[in-house]
Length: 164
Ligand code: PNS
Image (cartoon, rainbow, N blue to C red; front, side, top):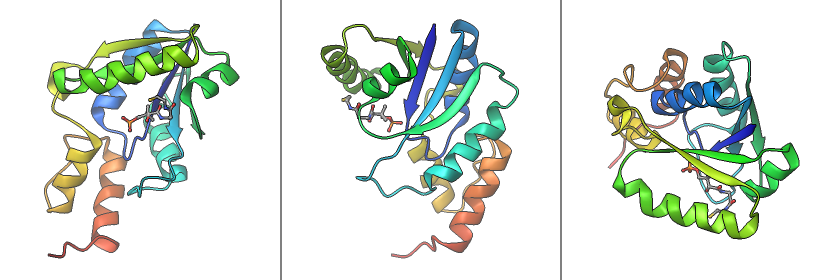
């Protein structure tokens, strides 16, 4: 079975990586799909995010990294995938994830959403938390892969001076 793991991944965190690794043991192929979202102003370009994810998943032979635009179910159908993979951290995720899963079900009945409970040590972790910590000069070494941490430090040092 082919699973799509869709998301913004701005940037990928150790929590995302944990879901990718565990998903790759459950499914024949996992396609990590980065959404091209014109409504958001990301920290990293889609191209940079693809590279960041490729570096830390290159040891996983059944994981592919790609970008997509539009509806996730349309992309899944185009790739011949049957599953949308999502991580669930806490009750706070549940409402929005359930709404998304139900919506996707109405759009494509054949595609199932499968949730993996995020590992305990990453249950607090999100890309937003990572950006918040880095923005104010904190270390993100324990939150993201090493090459991503370097990218983040560089990005905030060059382009994101903290003002008011
Ligand atoms: O990492 P994120 O931002 O939580 O990922 C959200 C994502 C990309 C999975 C979701 O916004 C999405 O699937 N967007 C594509 C548009 C779509 O298919 N919408 C229908 C479901 S509500």
